[in-house]
Length: 226
Image 1 (cartoon, one colour):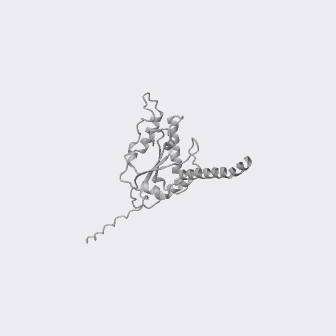
Image 2 (spheres, helix red, strand yellow; image 1 turned 120 degrees about the horizontal axis):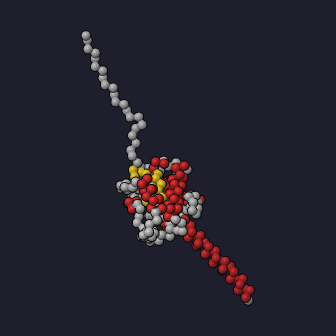
Image 3 (cartoon, helix red, strand yellow; image 1 turned 45 degrees about the vertical axis):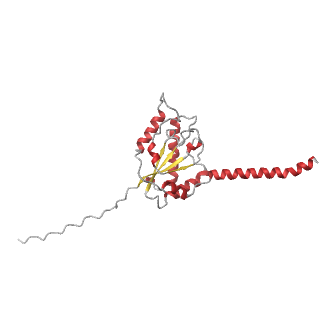
């Protein structure tokens, strides 16, 4: 009798395990599903005005602040934003996965990078330049190391978009903010803070003709008769 109960219960247990695994797989798939091109375009095509951000100066400020040993540092939660004007820009947050402590993009994120490239060549976004903003979550590493890593990851995305998808390099500006501007300041150790941002930065300047037409030569005056 006991053996019979075990025999009949076996398929039920197996079915339960299978359903549980299927639900977990479905949830994981939903979490890692790549955004569509239209999702990204919809986030980025509401540009109104350029943010007043000096990128070379900002890079220097990030490194200087990350290196500084400030006695009264307020800590990750209360640390002031280093580039608050970026919040004014249309932005898409991408959950790009990298190998630990490296700028190497994991294969699971290749599709997302491809969708970003598709969005950047959409007709509504072609007139614009974009920031590629790298972030990291607060961890055991130094702020300087995290600032460097965030810049390398932003550079890596720029390089893939340029070299693989042929996006013009003049349209892409990578900047790493490290721990100096968390995406979720209330939870500095959250994985959300490692997301990468694409932000519509400015309009491309209108191109001038490579060879402007030369002015018409002035008509020669008839020579005076002597």
